[in-house]
Image (tube, rainbow, N blue to C red):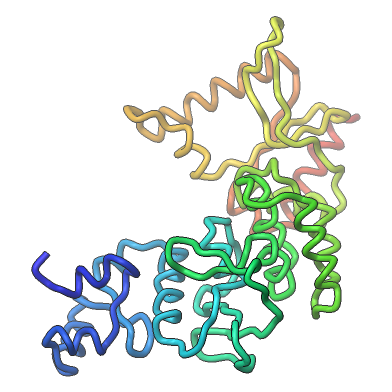
Length: 315
């Protein structure tokens, strides 16, 4: 590791223009390295190495931007809203990742920049946590505040994820909301608190459940355990409409990857899933309806398909 900037970037993933100048680079060299892809400009005055940027996911790129914002923003701030949730490892869906959210911890004014939104709200010392070495608002507060600035579906994804990961509890979310009923967009949170379910194992499952509710489908049981004659649990299904004899499964690539054994190919996991489904059918006589990511982008058609299956099996 000959480049001293690599050492600097070990902490935050980013380095500043002034640090590059201190290491002997000039502005022409910086510009040349950015053009050549060796470095990537994260925001004005902040960079990361090109290989870091290229191998990062959208969520990771957002957190690199957040680090750059923290290092270049005067005055004390803490990551908040969707940015705080990502820092805590909570799932975020449908958010604008081109902008970092921070809440000011001083008397600074609320404002928007190209890549950062500055919020102003009362914060006590107890509201601010440290993740790594980064100041971040707590999970419950961040879930509730995110719901005020995103759509209902997005807010449910984060609430379900936070509950599933045991980063917060339902009562904590309710208490937090009770102190924020005056916020613009707070009415949305009533719906989130009613429908949030920590049994969702992925954003896809949350979005599927939201689709069922939004389009007036019967509310299914969640994470239903299927047992054999001896009482042993042989499978767990995402959704169950017992009165219709139908199981629902959301099939995302994340799920197959999660159950992939070290020596297996993805096709092996798919084959095992097929065997599992056949066994469940034999034990219960239920029919399966499956949803994939593409189905969630066409909610009306998907709801009609599921409704038709439920009606057919109930007849």
